[in-house]
Image 1 (spheres, each protein chain N blue to C red):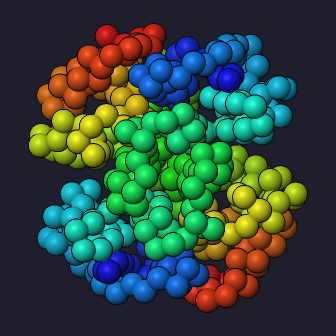
Image 2 (image 1 turned 90 degrees about the vertical axis):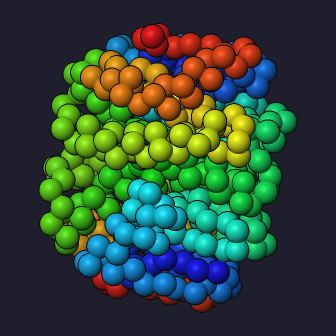
Length: 198
Length: 198
């Protein structure tokens, strides 16, 4: 199973992290982002949006980090990570939407500005972060994990861009409950870090 | 089962549309957005983010449109709308991520600027739209539906903000394949519209 991968991409790291925690073996295919390999074949054949990660597992090809998390957990026995029940799937799904929207457009986008020089509205990235992070801080005051009282793909989806949020000028020390949750993730068996993590 | 609802919200309409198509009965609880009811109890008790839709079904309370779609389809017999298999769930999930990110920050955000006067970067909303809409146009050149060759919750998630994209200054006539797909959705049995739809 191949993961088209970039080491400094939090979206790629979501998949590497989950695969490590769940004991799923991936063959990483590094994509040279600076050379624009993501805007050429074979990536654009697999994902016309020219984005990574892309997972190829036999006949299955998926182009989005959250879709890949759902697929891997469902295909390789991770009911503890992505549950079967309706209410439980809904509970995890709430956080996958937050990951795709507020985390992507908050902490991730702030880092894209500061670390990679993308011409996004930095003020707006901080506004979005200022909505989702206090919400998470409140949630984690009485919850050890984001959903279901245990580690799930929700944690794997949201952790990466918070672990490197300092690269976008966001100080996670202001959020002690989130910081403690991040330490719990780092303490999980087979945890792997990403570049830039402190 | 109660849906805290706003008629002009595309996020709320995602749920109303799916429930209508799948024959699921909802009790709509209108939330007076202009009076700020979404920023007060009971909404903020159910969702501290102060956003709607919120679904309450007995003990289950969910605060995100995509989570609600997954829950309703899983709980009320909609395997044709939200499948069981790993690859199939992954395929639908890709579009739920696009809905939460690119559609939300593209066509939806453009409409928030033009129709509701939100101080967002209009140029950026058009840039994001200019990435996701051509991608969808290409996909729908050889696909009748977004995923699995049949209507799924992916279509219910993405249709709403495209159906009212003209309110954000986006002309869907430039995308004939997307327009034809929207007509297929409108022709589904028990289809319901939302205010502003042409």
